[in-house]
Image (cartoon, rainbow, N blue to C red; front, top):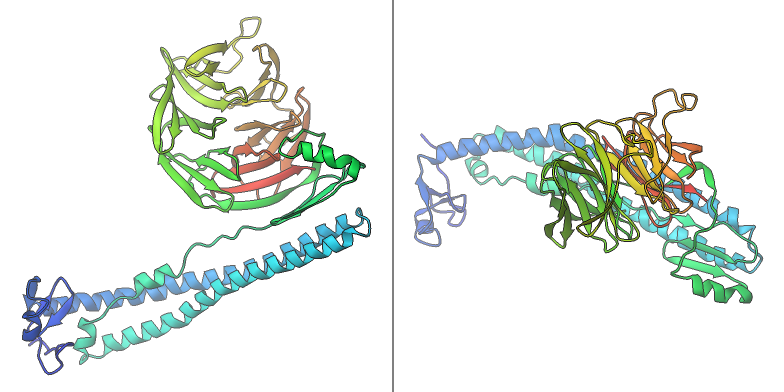
Length: 501
């Protein structure tokens, strides 16, 4: 015989039915009130509902004990580790500030004291945020065993039928207390000191200038109109920032200004994110087999659609066809020039022949395919040839089929080809994405060697950038300050790297 159940609203009444809409047992008075029009079942069927509730309690306990508690414990340990690393990083920032102190005269001591105050305040704020997050984690860890204990008492007490039937799961609320959290890190930066040209230093939102009267006017004139100065490669690169894109098989990334990038993987989704890892926009490509992405001077996303033989542009939330390729040519690599042209590498699916095409709007204004001897510049194969334009006008291509760097001048005349110098690396030279910087360096990602290669504009191999954090670097772009944004293929993380001073 089913256990009697008293009504929660009318304790002196026995329940005779169960409201499926409100998920509560009802007495006769309740059925005549607000539950009158609701769908109900009789007292006999409530026994099966009670069994469902018992299974729900058991499943809740299992997930809390086996999944949530270990997750919260791991997150707590992770926060402890992040607090320690944050303290170390801010100590490093203070040391960097002290290095530059000796290059300023006595008056600048007052400015540096302000910077130390700002560093400490920012550090304390960041640590406070982390500790607040940790406090919530610890509170949840203390609460969950009590929930499990209470649930267990309900299960073990055969007489508490009311408690079982009226049980409300707390899992949804618990899951929400474990959000993903990533905190950006402020940085201390200053350009190289050059005699007679003044000094500049920056941390967080504070920027200070120390300028002589004779150079102040030239500084004002140059603000907002940067000129490229000779810069040197760092002996060791510095990871300035990092964030997780949560993109599986991260393959493409392109800088979009304001510390923002577009990035994508193999699933046809293209994301717009900032340096803090915040997803600003997500869109689906018209075909999962797109080949490359780029951004034009207006900040609009452009991508090549290999299957449909077209290049698309995203304006706001709408995707339009910018132009279609003719005959059997399929677009692959894509690059937007400073002149507003679009460079596209195209391939014929049948014989894998490849050429470089320059578009002005929908109009083809240049095609590059052969050298002066009639030989194909690009190798046969199905893989993409990625592109970049150098400041000297050269067009640079990463031919992933032949694992080579190919450079032609603006007119399309062959300049040089670089394959592998076997003395440089133990593994083959396997370039992927390609960018150029303000010094006309050519930089390629190499996921086989877990590094980046830097070349002089005239073909000399300058440097191999390696770092413990560069694990399968594939995606590559560069911002206006010559910092590299490197996308890691498997982890989906993006590293922002300073490699010049």
